[in-house]
Length: 31
Image (cartoon, rainbow, N blue to C red; front, top):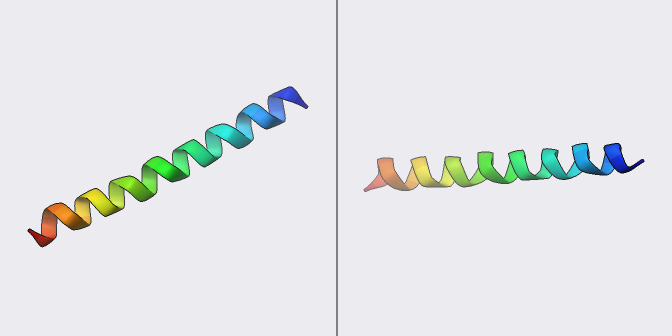
């Protein structure tokens, strides 16, 4: 169970980085 929570948190973290990266690239290309 503890391992599943760790994988779940890692998945959220990766998604967050991915979304922030898209926003950053979009901002960089726009200006």
